[in-house]
Image 1 (cartoon, rainbow, N blue to C red):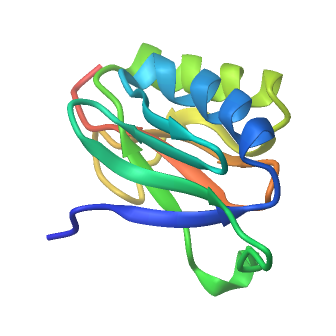
Image 2: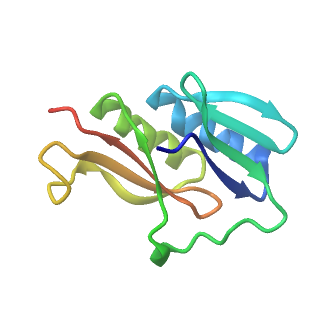
Length: 125
């Protein structure tokens, strides 16, 4: 249904370091890079990360989060580790979430700008 999502950040260069590391294990990369603007995806851009003078305040109680499809459970683990190494904060270690489904394997991170992101793999272990 959605073609892409855009988020505003304080510093696109800092965001690039974080998203390059976090999304690489999932098979995504920066496909578009211009001053103040980054586009991430697999074959086409699906996530735009743009500098904004007033980024939306990421509020934990808003319910807003972004979930990235992961090809394997190991890639979920690698996403979590890479995101933590680039300044992300843990918001849920990798593991099964039986409340969401039998094979719902996910990890949750808060990025340096406060956005809540998730990597999810639904393949059986």
